[in-house]
Image 1 (tube, helix red, strand yellow):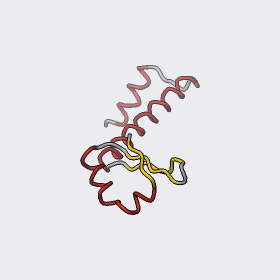
Image 2: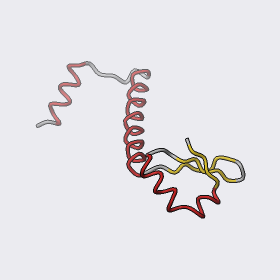
Image 3: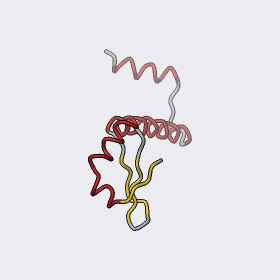
Length: 85
């Protein structure tokens, strides 16, 4: 992964954005020697958001199972039948 200073971002924003779009690789921006932000292209960001949403749903499902909030297959089928009418 590429690392750039915030001053580089200020001076060469157009070039950095072109690099991100071309390479599809994030750039870590540092400020005062510390990580400050990541620059990523829109397509990559959208994909990451979709993945995060899916993973959060899986985590909620696993938590429900761990807490015993489950229904039998027959009950689930009956509930779904009401929604599909």
